[in-house]
Amino acid sequence: MHMKRYWSRLLALVLVLSIGLMGCSGTPDGLTGDYRQDTLTLVNTMRQALDVSQESPNKAELQAVARQQINDFSARYQRANSSVSALSSFTTMRTALNALAGHYSSYPNRPVPEKLKTRLEKELNLVEIALKRGS
Image 1 (cartoon, rainbow, N blue to C red):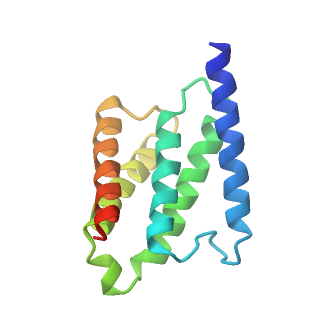
Image 2 (image 1 turned 45 degrees about the horizontal axis):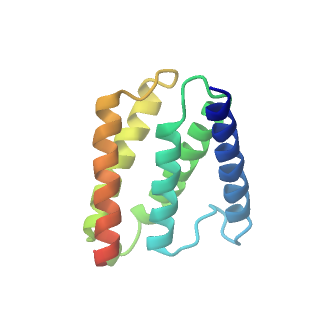
């Protein structure tokens, strides 16, 4: 149990540091402007937020980071040109983002149900596959 807590804290620290460094990248929302890289970053953030245990002291922080990145990503790519919005990775990512953001808005203090976690993991895997194919 102590080892799990250690890894959880270490993971949260790495996430906070990486978000902090991305925040200094010159763009106000912390995104790079590279759709593929921004999408992969958000996929990793979402997985970390989904995997954090209910008892983790960093749970609220990880969820807050995920919410902020979801909002930043949506704001940047919502108005993106048609070349991004037509990609299958984008439409699948939007579906996953809407599902997780909806859960956080409706049930901020409840854990993400296993059924939703399973669905989101499938969608995130599809996003990664589509990005590798360039779609």
